[in-house]
Length: 331
Image (cartoon, rainbow, N blue to C red; front, side):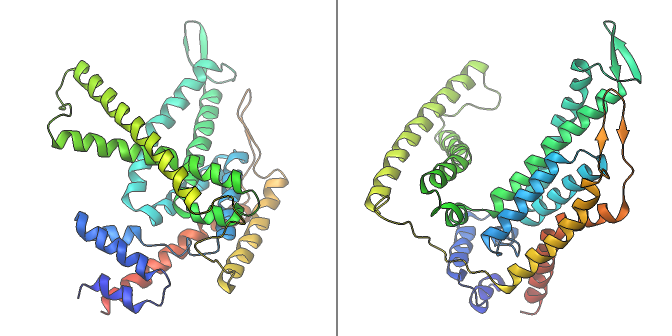
């Protein structure tokens, strides 16, 4: 028996049937042995949804509010490490795609903002300052950090978890947010399927096709995608009506219970969060870029607590991955 398949029956996990389905899908698609390792649920994602939601929202807020270069770099690196532990090489490729955007935003900001003392050069009589360039790098870095943390959020906080947290408090709002968050990825996935299907039957535009042919192919794909989206919305509405949506209090597929592991994780995060916020609140992370650059000196213990706070989920995932490989080697 294949080692991965044996582990499905050896693990006392309630979701082993779901993992078996994923394994069979992996065999059918033939995308390599590492697919199963990426699709399996990580240790951080197994925590209670409330704990995961609180941590990710805190990390996102800190990434937006703290503009100190050291703290910003720590946030980006921690988010990237977490995404790598969740998605593997896909997270690295996604981050590399953000680097040109980071560079463009950093370079454009001094063209619009001329504040600063250190003039690097002049263009059409306007100064291109070092302070404005640093401010653009910080602003773009905040945006990149937000994207990375939200990427981790989408990987961890599934639709069922979000509905579990907010479905009883605000059912309509929870349903709306869940539908909106899954709409764009779902449409992109369907668009790729449509284009692949058209290429298989010889109706898609070739790579060296004329721009007019590519435009016509894109319009056809958009037309088919719109039809599928409208048909899917009608099907979803009928399915919701058949399942009794709005007839009573909503129930959840999964029943999450707060375990001792969740309490220990939340307590450790709370202690590290307080240790990291104290120097931030007392001016240890103050950073001003224009018109004069003023960056507060880094307090070592505060930055260390901040880094450790953001890296806890990655540490949990890496620890479980090591245990996973050890278990596989013993089979």
